[in-house]
Amino acid sequence: MSTFITIFKKEFTDTIRDRRTLFVMIIFPLLLFPLLITAVITLQTSQMRKAQEKVLRLGLVLDGNAQSFRQELISIKGFRIAEGISRDSAQVMIERDSLDAVIVFAPDFDRRVESRQAGTVHLYFKFSDEYNISQRRLRELITAYERTLIARRFEQLNLDKSIVDAVSIDEHDVTPLKEKIGKTIGGFIPYLFVIFCFMGSMYPAIDLASGEKERGTIETLLTAPVSRFQILLGKFAVVVLTGLLSASVSMLGLYAAVRQNAEVPPQVMDTVLGILNAGSILLVLSLLLPLAVFFAAILLSLSFFAKSYKEAQSLISPLTIVVLLPVAIGMIPGIELNASTALIPVLNVSLATKEIIAGTIQPLILAEVYLSLTILAAVSLLACARWFEREETIFRGA
Image (cartoon, rainbow, N blue to C red; front, side, top):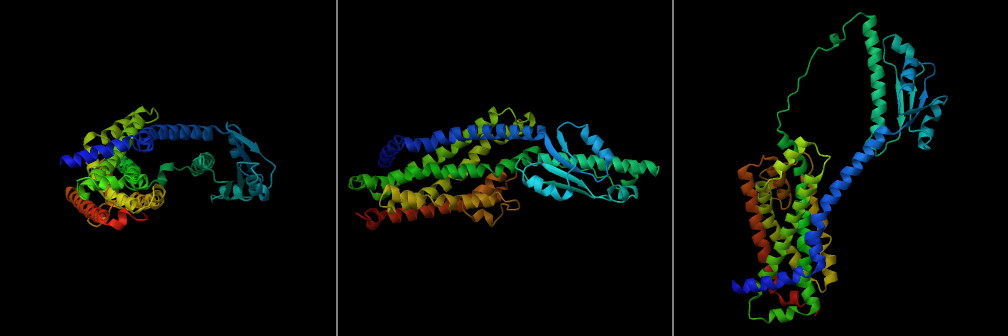
């Protein structure tokens, strides 16, 4: 045990001296989310406000119809009306950015409305990335005009408008707010945990294996009066620890970002902070422990196989996509944690985290996730140890 601790201290000291590793493991995850979330929410709020207050250049083609709509539209601020354009030029003017949208009333609009039929209104616009606020503003105008026409029809017929309401639906959503928000952010948190756990393990694994081979110090270490398994275990523990530290720090950064953001409503803020409690976070981190062992085994195996630091990076970097794919699948609606998905590596962590955050995790399914991850971690560790024992692996290319 003392030998393992000595090797662990030596490898961990070497690791924390590497500025690049420290940046990826601590600085990057700690600062990324406060900066990212604050910037995204601020920019999103600003863009939505701009889109809502933007003066829309609106073309209006009436052909003698809907004069009341025209009068009402002129009195509303936020629109610059362009009349006298032809219906054939509407699409071209929008494509050339001369207008933001064009409303075209069918030639028989008034006649059909007077005969108590539906008049046709064409709305031309170009899709934008401004959250479709401009289009919603125009649809609200047309919908309000439709309500006015319907009210006039009921008045002419001397009927109560409520006569058309044969059924009144009173919806009761009994889903707790914690579960709603938990299901939403629970899909994002595994992405955060897994990617930083993997990234936090990646650079130490490369440096402690292929880095030592490149520096020529691996031979000296192998001549020490300790078994190869003890050497591997010391390196292994450092890689696992850095992965878990990176994931924990990223969670701290996310908590700080949510805590400091003034745009989040107080009720939602209280719920989110209640979700991100110590018990839930520790439970999620316990899921990451065997997953970090699995990552460490793969990363160290590839790093020992590589001839140089650069080759190790080339071998390991594509794995990021492979790791993120199950997490992305876990975010798809309808993919639930069950007896089958609990056996799939990474995906089970993603789905279990979502259930833990939402407070809907089933103990038996959670136990299955732990069991599958533990078996995976043990097998991967043994496989890595066998790989490390092979001379052609350690001295490949020597």
